Length: 260
Image (cartoon, rainbow, N blue to C red):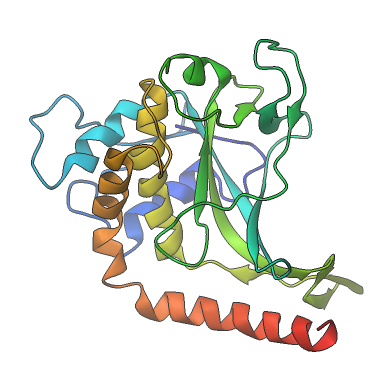
């Protein structure tokens, strides 16, 4: 799997993060490799092995193939309108994602969503998988029209949030850096990033790749896989998640006092 050149975590660092983070299952522990020549992440592929009941996600994950690119993102936590989430992914300036205005026009502009709310197992949005137009076209029975991505590589995009900011009516929690006020970023714990990686590959990328429904509200297989993929992390995440959410809550409280 390639990594977008604008990602704040490169391929080699991603491999270290995934291999060294507690919670990784034995089937992947220290088995993700960095391909220096290709500058890519190599993930073990169990898709051709006999499937073990209760671990279907391990075997589905490999079906995602090599048609994906990974990148990091800022998770924007909006406080207005009852709250929302939005991902600002790290990609090149000429790359885009969104829904098409005219479904049959491959050159049409993409309309970027104003928010990226999705059903997740926690209050935060850890990642997002965005297919290419070609992947979407494989699914003749799709129930919705998902957004698509246009990357210079021609691949689909897996977005993993690695920092969060709190926003309300255009205002951010800020800190002074280099003499300037900039949005204060709350680092997302490594375990949460690693969990999101396996969630996105096994619950979304593999199904998009094979022309199947890949949204949480479209397929029970998606929910089955993400719950299995997250299980080993959920049991050790509580302290990290609580710390992250407390930092977010402090920022939200500060903004609410300033702009009720």
